[in-house]
Image 1: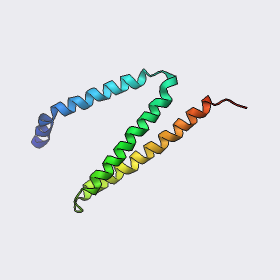
Image 2 (image 1 turned 90 degrees about the vertical axis):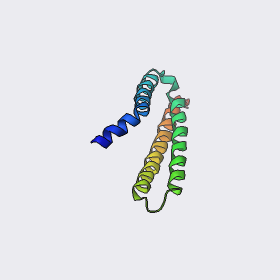
Image 3 (image 1 turned 60 degrees about the horizontal axis):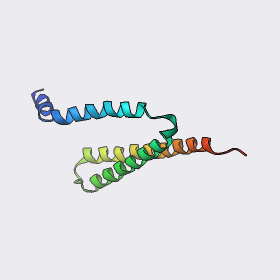
Image 4 (image 1 turned 90 degrees about the horizontal axis):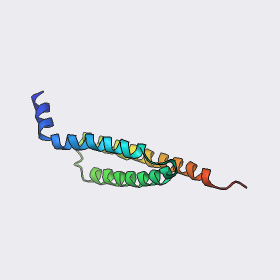
Amino acid sequence: MEAFLSLIHNNIDIIYFVILSVFVGIEVIGNVPTVLHTPLMSGANAIHGVVIVGAIYVMLHLHEDNLAGLILGFFAVLLGTLNVVGGFVVTDRMLEMFKKKK
C-alpha cells in the first residue's frame, strides 16, 4: 500500500494532467456541431493510426522475456486497429448521408 501511495505522490502531476485532459476532451467533443462530426471522426482515425504505429514500435523494441509488455502491446494494436476500422466505417456512413440521391 505504501508503494502505491508513493507512486501516486511521485506522479501527481501526470494524474492531474490526465484528469484535466479527460474533462477538456469531454467538453470539446460535446460542443462540436453536428456538421463537423465527420471531419472530427477522420481526425480521430488519424490519431489512432499513430497510436497503432507507436504500439508496434514499442513492441519491436521490447525484450522477448517481457511477456506482460508484449501482451499489452498486442492488445493496444488490436484495439487501436478495431477503433480505426470502426471509425472509417462510421465516417463512410456519415458521408453517404450527404450524397445526392438519384
